[in-house]
Length: 214
Image (cartoon, rainbow, N blue to C red; front, side, top):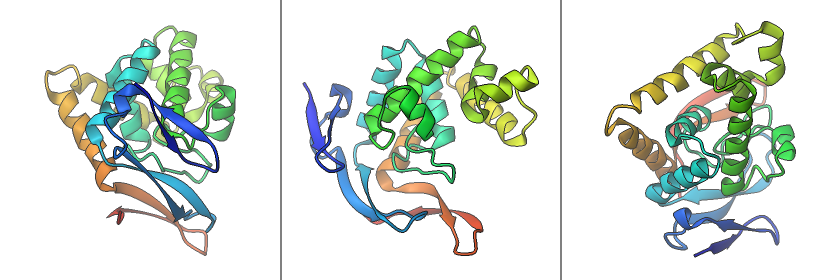
């Protein structure tokens, strides 16, 4: 079964069966981009179980452990399909424009974002012969940085990122723990509880946690 939702302009994307529990799982709305002030079309997730199942299914398509993909999403966007960084990284898996083009996906489309991110993770794991630390470091800081330093770069952000994601994967090996954390993160997406990056007029950046009105 496939269900299509109209999003940007006349473009439509196909929501996989795992994310097609019903037309109420996703809502497309128009909001103001906090970075540009322009109106943009965004997606609200109403069904966290469907979101979690979609991640599992797309991870399986790339032969990736679902715990890995969930842990990356948790670190990258906290399950916010509308997350946007100052560098233009977008969506659940925070794909940069260049990475989205590289894998031929629309980063603003949640399903394509997942597909692009999982394809990139699979590529990195193959490149680094299954070394999770190097693959995660490259996902966060770029392949060139890993090559330049011959390992995990000495950037505090990257080292913290690798440690957090690998720790979550490790905890996921304990029965029941992974599902509880995944449900909590996906529920945040459904409730609009995200860490929001706000760029002030003077260029300063603030991060706040708030619940967006639906």
